Structure formats: C-alpha cells, structure tokens
Amino acid sequence: MFEPGHLHVAHPALQPDDVSYDIHVHYEVSQTDSGAGMHFTMDGEINGKPFNETFDLPKDLAYNFASEASRIAEKHGLPKDTDLHSMDGQYDAMFEDIRHQLDMKSGDAVKPEHLE
Image (cartoon, rainbow, N blue to C red; front, side):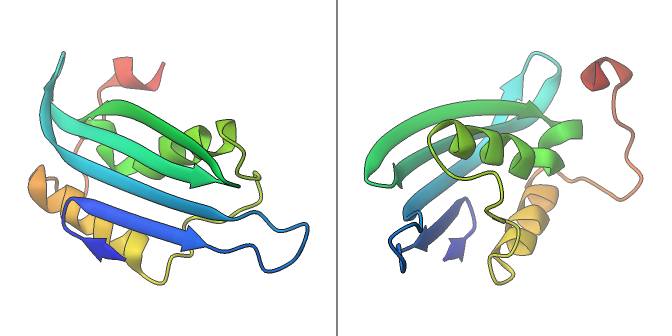
C-alpha cells in the first residue's frame, strides 16, 4: 500500500521454500551534505526476522532509492531475485512522489562526484 511518504509491501510465504516479508519504507525531504535530499527509514520483517535501517540520498540520486532499498532488504534475507519493482504501481507512485517533493525534472543533472 502506498501513501505519500510511506510505502508498505508485504508477501506471505505461500510455499515451504517461499520467503515472507513485511516491509515499510518511510521517507521525507532532508538536508544532506550536498543540499536537499531524502531521508529513508526501512523497517519490518523478512522471514520473521525484524530489521530497521536508515539511509540518505542527495536530490540527484533520490530517484535511485529502490537500488539502496533492495540492497538493504537482501542484506536482511530477501532473495536477490525478488522483484520489488513489481508492486502493482506502488513503485511508480513513490518515484513520482519523491520527484514532486524534491521538485525534480526530467533531464536534471547528476553530480559527477555522486557517480563515483
């Protein structure tokens, strides 16, 4: 379920070898070392094991939030082949909300030092 500032994805284990997860991603505009950006808090459970982590992304990299969120979820037990992008349009809604909150436009430049 998506609401501005919060994404919730859950999946029950349907088969014995399936992984269950219940993940919340909260986000808000924040100040980073290089100006405006987004602060993210991820928490929930993966296969019954709780986790809680935060991360920050500068404005020009905030659109890439799913990569960092996937890395954190994988670290806590979500299989690499789990596609969090296929969340019934929720990913797209979150992407657009972040673009709106940070006043990002198509073609905005990425700072070269953020690509290293």
